[in-house]
Length: 441
Image (cartoon, rainbow, N blue to C red; front, side, top):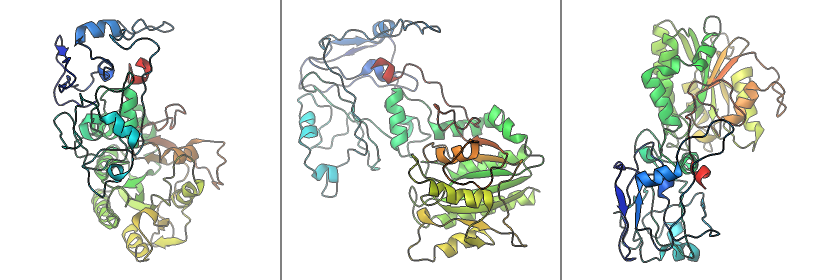
């Protein structure tokens, strides 16, 4: 999955027979499939030719209804009936050993045994990084793929962040969704954040079906943008929101309302004030250009809207009450005042700020969602947007009393659930990924 240098076509991969030798396998570039390079087990393969393997594994793609004509080549030493396992240790990782590294301190005899091999690619004791990169960011999800015949012949570390897993830059930390996507795909492809970056940079986001769908509400309705106000890059990024605001105004949006969710989890607690100030300045510039743009409501991400796995629908309901109904106990003349005053509570933090709405000069909410409006959820990560998407889209929704169900045009930044086809409209199309690691396994 990690590829600083390209795999050269027609170049053989010599593998030493001496088990004490270190192995330097060919690395992958974007779009190349590492399923062909799964770790060899037992006595090591003498040579793996890219051309030879590609012909045997992937002769051509089948047509509709056809069986796949390509298959894995027989292993030189791993006979039929042997087991190859892919095991994901969610939350596990590798970092330099010290007294504060709980994984290093813990008693892990099974994993220790897997590492004690003579042909190791990485010496944990010496903290060598010759053939792998030790994540120092403490990423939350780290996948280790091991193939074996009785006992492993080698193991290696793989990067779980940055461009190695399809994120925009090497400064972007990995997370569980990114890690599972990369492992399941078995190849490097542009993930959510990078897909959105590319669509915004090229302008294609405004040419797609999703944007044209919501654009039909711009003439008489309000464009509502709902999402996490943060530069953490895990669920959203404020620079993407800024570009979307600019692009929407240039494509006809005359009235815009932003419903913010404060972070404090992927970024420092207390940073919400700075993000709100930045957004308020951007909206003020839009107002100078004749666009009625304001923050309409807000709340902390863990207390308002962004629940996941249907753990607590009351979290979504609190957001619904603020965003759609404009009804919350906390009302303020501005979002900046709301965040500052709510944080005055000694127990308050950005993640758990209570929901609030912003009032106009007459004391009415500035931006409840009503019939004829357009709504975009601008998070690119799916897990904490699916529940809100259901509430916005499902006619027969019964998880809480919505009080009213406005007739709107709704689109997600991305499609959040491929199986449920949810949402049915989205601004950035998901990538088509062929020949995944699951297909080979």
